Amino acid sequence: MTNELIINARPHETRVALVENGTVVELHLKRGSGQELLGNIYLGRVIRVLPGMQAAFVDIGIDKSAFLYVTDIYNDVRQWEQIMMQEGEDENNQEIGMPQQMLFQRGSDINIEGLLKDGQDIMVQVSKEPMGTKGARLTSHITLPGRHLVYMPTVDHIGISRRIESEKERARLKKVMEELSPPGEGFIVRTVSEKSPKEKFKSEMEFLTKLWANIQKKRDTSSAPSILHRELTITLKAVRDLFTKEIDRLVIDSREEYQSVMEFIETFAPTLRYSVELYEGRKPIFDAYGIEMDINRALEKKIWLKSGGYIVIDSTEALTVIDVNTGSYVGKRNLEETIVKTNLEAVKEIAYQIRLRNIGGLIVIDFIDMDKDADKDKVFYALKEALEKDKVRTAVLRMSELGLIEMTRKRTKEDINLFLTEPCPYCEGKGRLKSPSTICYDIFRDLERESVSGEEGGKLYLLVSPEIEKVLKEEERYSVMELEKRINRRIIIVGKGDFHIEQYEISLQ
Image 1 (cartoon, rainbow, N blue to C red):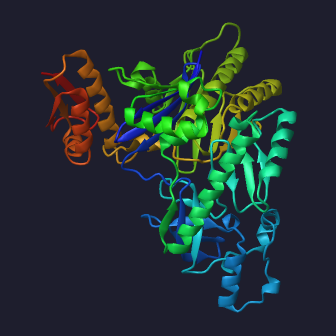
Image 2: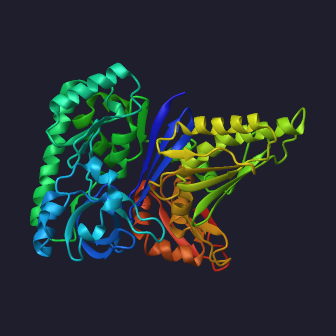
Image 3: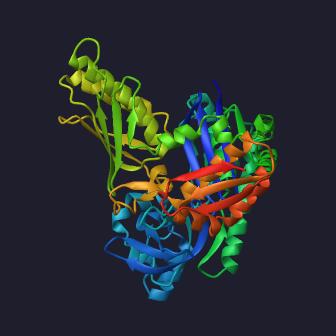
């Protein structure tokens, strides 16, 4: 089986699926109306310092103020000097020029009010997207990712990806980077760089250092709040971060995005150009590759196992709870064997769903109770092994006496379920329905499917609820017009007062 990157790019939404051996293991989404902030660099303005939380609110020019913790502030000598001159403090008592490793080690000795003050300008980078009611998280430890290297202009450190396992290769890469790196600056060698020649690192290093110089120049001529550097689009980010030697091909269904990908590859990885394909089939690409079914499954609360058992995934504001049940599975020999087999089968599905749904934060898994410590250990180690394929950092605790395993997974972006759904208005938020945008995009894909079955030209009649009619005719009107051009049909939208918000009908004329 092959490993593939499948990209469905439309003006209103871009979806990137990482498929390993025929199974979708990662899904990345970006909607045209939403802001993509992660990795962007801003000149921000401190609007409020919070000594009690050792943090500050920073205005970066978006609707909600971003959050900066004391440990995420770079000990910039120039900033220190400016603050001390303004405050009239003795610089001999300050930690000017302290190496960053010591800064973190002595984090408890550093007070945010000694680093920042209200109204101060500071260059920051978004390290976490806004999630729910929380604003974006910031850092002043700037990183600029390339395809082979991650440049850290504020850190004097050379790192090698832990996924490069050969000690001989790690030593070679370390030596190469020490020869090339400017003093006082840092780089991390990415996994894709394994066995790459010295010249490739040199050219990318020159590109990244020039990019940093341009960002600094822009900072000197900008007023806060303003953006200094915008991260790549989701499509190019997928090419940079996911299109490794383990991926056999990349398939994309937009000619415009295909050209953008080819230009990026010609610059950074020309050998990959033969592995990129433009999909031109009439059937929607995610249908053609069987991906749509996996996405819909990721929105379900109950996931059935092949044996007849099932797991239930339920998210609260503070944590995600996963419950394992035997369901209709009765086993072949005895109850104890049935329980262990169900738990082990559930482990694989849980690890898969956590990665696919991008569940982060605290996760509590309620396995079926087992009597033997050996069986508990077997399930625990099976879960740890299943999670090793996940690139996001996880920490797992041993199973408790109650059959619970507690684990954490670093939050990198919003849970797909929360991204694609919203609280149900019919039950006052006790359940969840697909959001209007998600329903509209489901409709667009169904319209594409229906257009394949008939002759080109003519009309498609779409019956929808009044809420969706309004969204299609107002917020999504340009998407509807673009779809009409692509399928060469006129779309007639009719609101039906008795339709549920998720209900719609399509008929050909």
